[in-house]
Image (cartoon, rainbow, N blue to C red; front, side, top):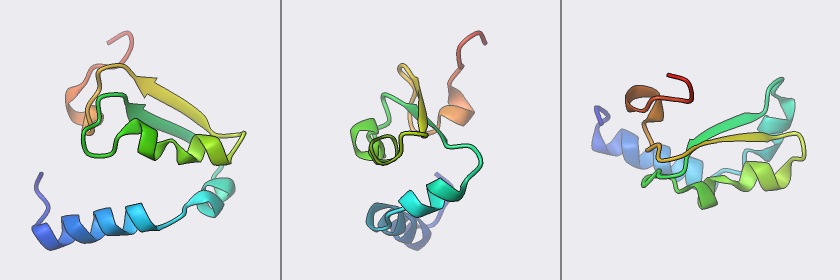
Length: 77
């Protein structure tokens, strides 16, 4: 929410047009943490990692928004 318009635009453009499958394969941990109520990057759209890698673990937080790190309690909190 604190990014300027050009930065936000180019960030969304880069993430939506870049296939990051090869980058994910090189990572030691391939966990994707996502809220199922993300209105900015819907889980169905972001689930490509899970479909492209059998080693990718998806952790989905029910009711969590896009900024789940800042304003959503996780399990047991």
